[in-house]
Length: 453
Image 1 (cartoon, rainbow, N blue to C red):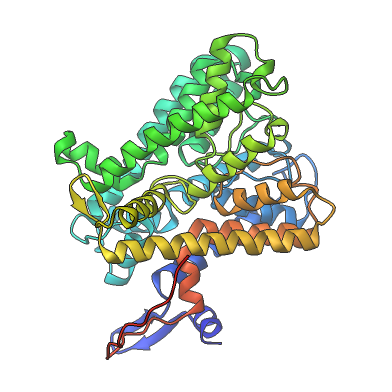
Image 2 (image 1 turned 45 degrees about the vertical axis):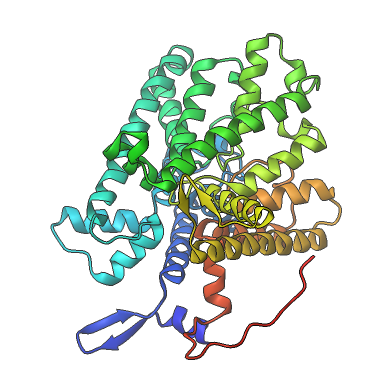
C-alpha cells in the first residue's frame, strides 16, 4: 500500500517546494517504466514498421530496447528506418541511463544538480562521491559517443563496400551503438552469423561490448591514472576478472562445441572456429549478439552460457546481471572462509558491507530467475525446460540470447519477461526496496548460533 501510494503520488509538499518521496532505485524503476511506455507508443506510430504490430509486441520491443536486452518478438528488419531509429534512441538512453542524460541536460544549461538528482545519478552510475559527479557524467557521454563513432567507422570499412554507402553506414552505426550499450539488437534476422568468419566485424563488435561492459567508473579510473599501481581495487578486479572469465569461457565453449557440426564444427578454417569461440564466450556478458546458431549448441554449452549471462558485466556499466564484481566478491568470501582469513584482493580487505551487498544481490538475482522460470513453466509448459530456463536467465541478465522461443511464448509468458527485463536492468537490489523498509535498530542483540551445512 505504501509503495503504491509513493508511485501514484511521487511528490510531497515541503517548505521549499515539492520533493520526490521515492528512493533512488524506485525512481530509476519508475523512470525506466515510463520510457518503455513512451517507446511502445512511438513504435506504434504510422510508418515505423512494414507490418502492423500489436501493442504488447510494441511494449515488449520497447522494453527490450530500453533495458538493452535484445530479446525480440518482432524481427528488427520488420521496422522501417524510422522504427529502427526509435529503437536506437531507446537503446542509447537505456544504456547510458536516463538520469545521466537528464543530468547532462542540466549541466549543459549551466544549472546545478539538486541533491536528490545527484543521488539518482550516483545510484545509476554506481559512484559514491558527489565531488566529481558532474565531470563523470560528461566523461560518460563523451566517451560513449567517441567509442561508438570509432566503432561505426571501423564497421563501415566492411559493410559499406558490401551494402553501399547509405545501408552500410546505417548498419555500422546501428550495430556500433547496440554493441557498446550491450543491447544485442541486430538488423539481420540471424544476428552476426553471416560474418562469423570476418575478423573486422567480430573483433570490433566484441571489443565494443567488452568496453561498454567494464563500467564507466573503471574507464574513468584508467583514463585518469594510466598506471596499474595507481588503479583502484575495483578497477584491478574488473580488468583481471574480465580477462580471466573471457579466456576460460572461450576455452570451455571451444572444447564443448569444437566437433558440433551445427556450430563450431561446421566452420571450415581454424581461424573461423577460434573467432566464433571467442565471440560466443564474450557475448553472454549481456551483449546478446551471436555468430553461431544458439539453438544448436549442446546442453553443456547452454548451461555455461546461462552462468555467464547471470554473472553479467562490470558495475556501473551498460551491462546487467548480478555484475562481475559481485561474483568475484562471493568467490573471495568463500576462499577466505575455507582459509579462515579475511576476504582480500590486491592487498586490500573487502568490507562487511560489500560482502552483505554481494550476497543480497546474488540471492535477489537467483530469486528473480526462479520466479520467472516458475511462471514460464506454468504458462508455457509445452516448451522445453532448458529453453525456458535459458530465456529466464537471458531476460534477467538483459542479454538477449535466445534458443528461439521468444515469439512462441504465450501472452502471460511475454509479460513475465517484460517484468524480468525491467527488474534485471534496474538491479536486483531495487527489489529489496519494494519488499522491506530500511530500519535503523536502536539496540544490539546477543548473537545466536545457526548450524550451516
